[in-house]
Length: 45
Image (cartoon, rainbow, N blue to C red; front, side, top):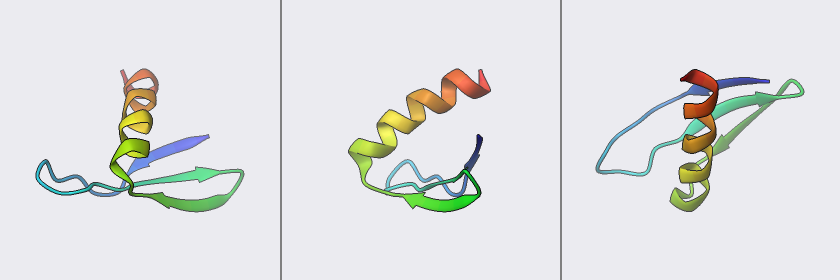
């Protein structure tokens, strides 16, 4: 599983682009992104 931060803006909705089984997905809803952000912190930090 590869996680990549596609774009980030503190004042706007930010998107995560990540690969899951070779598929490229973009997640932008804030509530979902917050969950992914927590997961990203676990993976990156």
